Length: 126
Image 1 (cartoon, rainbow, N blue to C red):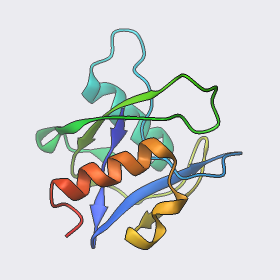
Image 2 (cartoon, rainbow, N blue to C red):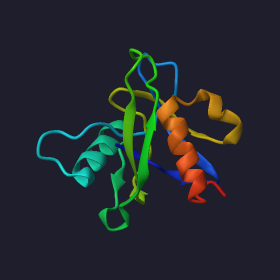
Image 3 (cartoon, one colour):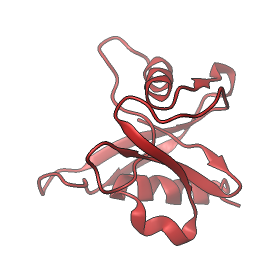
């Protein structure tokens, strides 16, 4: 699952340690976790932010080819939006974060690119 955060018409993306493409903040649920609990934990670990549960909503689900993974597999990623509080800082496995606009689409992993398009379809990118 992924957090879709847009500011000034650009999508927030992160680069994980040792990766060459940008991804969205987020990750997988641990046993017994809800979508909200998992995504808020992942964003806290990766960026030091607290998501606002009252504004948490599903944006949609994307499917895409994997980046740096075997052929004949795919990524299925549920995308959520939520407001946040705190000062953003790269942490854990995240080496950098940046906001990506239309001119930077080539930097995104396929699933992040699909989420970019989903955000655009919902009018979030302006």
